[in-house]
Length: 92
Image (cartoon, rainbow, N blue to C red; front, side, top):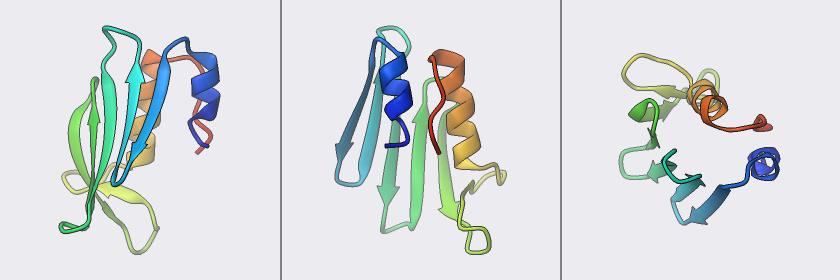
């Protein structure tokens, strides 16, 4: 539901949900985003055509997904990258 505003604001913005994975397909030439859960590693991976691949762990104190490398928030990185390539804002 959080991505619905962006689906409506872009000619090509296809969200595909599969067990453990979410893919966002953009217009040709813009690339795709993937979010993949690794239950065995207790982490989430995000692949962005702008920022590359990052792994995230769930912070027990804040309840937010944070980068295992530098502590940045998944939500902030995803929104920042999407608004550089697409119209609209996600409703996170």
